[in-house]
Image (cartoon, rainbow, N blue to C red; front, top):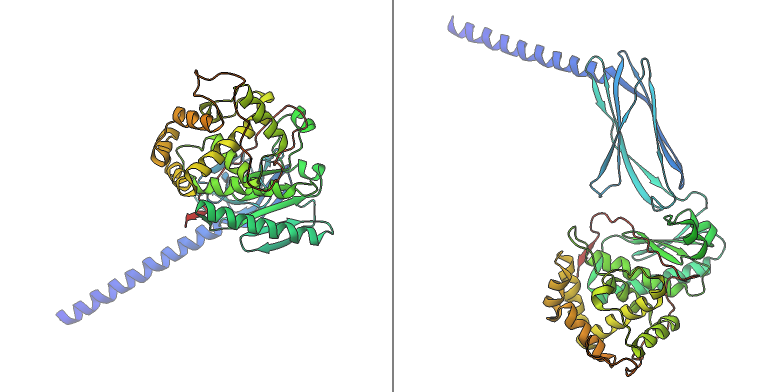
Length: 413
């Protein structure tokens, strides 16, 4: 009797479990069937907009629709609640873009979340769209960690540029002890008009007076004006910004401008003549901008040539006097997010004023407050072949375009 009762209890438990499983399955089926996705799409208009569209089908009234989108790796998600009307089953949102707001080659990941009056909720799987400059039919050449995008009929020129960029990147990585985990993307535009919509806007006056030869718009994306005569110098300058940026990437502090721009100018080769003349004139008159002031841009358009001349000279002094090993140590310190003064102390056992005094002395000047104007020496001769500066100034005006950087893509070698 007892054995029979135990068997009956076991059978009842099995039946109950089967019933619960079938109810759960039925409930899940109703939830899945409560909201059906009929269509989801997007439309990209380069430098103008990205439109996201969704069409659903449901037996119940839709009560809430939300769009989420983000650039993978950035950690920032934009949440867009969509206004819902009675009986509505088609929804859309248009992201209005400014020129240059998104770099070519950007990826945008997005998903929708929908809820209805019966309590059903559905979140779609993420979909990634590629934001490309589809005004042109791009050809692609890759060599190691350089991917070069170009259009037109000059394949020989494209191959020459990708070869130069590849060798320059290899040299910069070796000198700075940084290896890229992902390739650098270079978009080569044929003229200023073609490139204009891909560049961040500054002001109408700036756009009319300044010709941008190259600019880093993402942590590993470079826009390049391919028709310029000194395109190699532009490549070297901007690749230096990318490698240095990856070497020092941290969420706590930014690199002082004298170091970032000085390394980029040094990567080009010999200091361009306009910058050299401005530097020599300032040395002769004892009117050098201090290292402390070189940590940011001076804000005086008349000092553009001098600014770049000085930061080149300062970096050249550090490399010639202390060598590459201490420069690498300085970059490592900035990569930890410490202050400029702390980084200089760790690498060179100098503060900003001591560095300023030593550098001035190398140019034949006394420390500040003790020098005599008009008795200085000319700036030292550069030892590297001349490659002109990256940016052509068509008027006494300067603006600096900076891209928002995401997560690291580099590792120390």
